[in-house]
Image 1 (cartoon, rainbow, N blue to C red):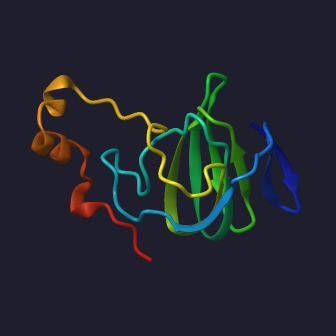
Image 2: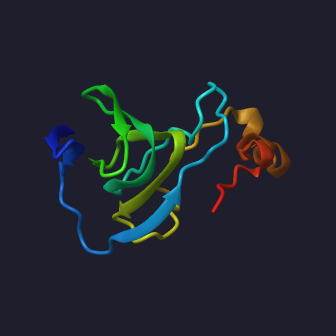
Length: 143
């Protein structure tokens, strides 16, 4: 991910082009406290989708991890961050963080495109699995 300054904003040069079927959505980033004390989402990755964030309000950062490096990129209105499939990423909300998301999958559910690893005992039955994969308080974002 190459970062270049652009009128005081962070712009990340696209490492790969987006193909057809791009989805655009508005996202208010989680304002709940994660187990590590940060406010925001959960680290995840997309195996098949290129993704970009355009910050429209608030502040925070995106944490990314690739084979090359771990990076924390500050986010504020006007920032653009773009990353390729396989990049582990997490949004951290420092207050009122809202973004426009460009995603290669056109907003469709990502069946098979996210990896969730659980110990065998948490996969034993539906009730145990649901308890292990449900966020505290339902984890629903505010709109």
